[in-house]
Each structure stands twice: as C-alpha cells, then as structure tokens.
Image 1: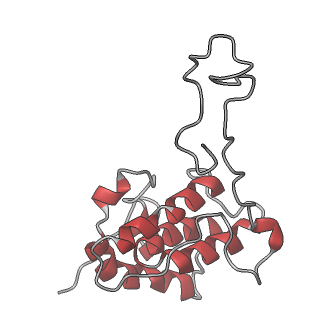
Image 2: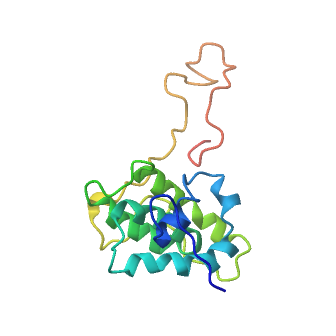
Length: 172
C-alpha cells in the first residue's frame, strides 16, 4: 500500500507524526499507548538520522518525548543533550515539561510490560559521566515536626496539637 501524508507546512515524517502528539501532557498516555508507539516510533526515528532535510532541534524534542514511551532512559539522555543548546526547545513545549514527561514514563514501562525497561533516575540525576550541571540534588529529608509547633508534651501550649509529622521516615 502506498500512503502519503503531509501537513500544511510540510511532509517530513516528524511533522506528520508529531503534530498529532502535541502537547505532551498526562492525557497523552491515553492517546499514545505503548503498544502503538513500539510500532510507530521506528518510522519516526528515521527523522533523527535523515541528512536532507535535516531535522531541526525544535522537532527533536517531540521525537524524544515519543521515544520516552518505549525507551525513557535513552530519551532522558537525548533531552539532556538537547537542552544544552540554546533555542533547541520548541516554543510549544519546555525543557522542564520534556524532563517531567520522560521521568514519569518509567512507571508505564514497569507496569505490565513484558520487556521492562530501565528506570529513569527519580532523584533527577542521569549518569555520573554526564554534565554535572544537568544533575539535580537529591531531595532534602522531610522535617520530623512542623516548624514552630512543638506538638503535644512539654513546651506545647495545650498538649493536644495534631500538627505533628506522622508519615515521614524521621517521624516518631
């Protein structure tokens, strides 16, 4: 079968595929199921190696967000690299949105997926060999008590305060 598709601004594979994916939001999970993307992504990935016309950086972000559905670790590294170039992120998205989308894909690849997939680091880091500026520090531990409220017991105003921490590892 010979099928041709195009958009009003061109027929490049990234235009035809990605215009239908924008914007990437939590609802995108329902629009792009993993089984579909496993079949669709190889065709879209050809845009990344095409020489003429070469894909522009702004479209790469959308391709990488699609890649995250089937390979979040590779997509994470691709977006980290993309984010190092000024102006590389399309104005219809953001670097933060791309990283959030990719970081939340590990859940989808672990739930009922026969080929698993590596998990994107949940602490914001990516690889010890990558640029340290792109790594986020680990979150600070939760306080054991609400500041300024000593809670029940000696020093409390009534001995019946309930504003104590109860669900943190540091809580008593």
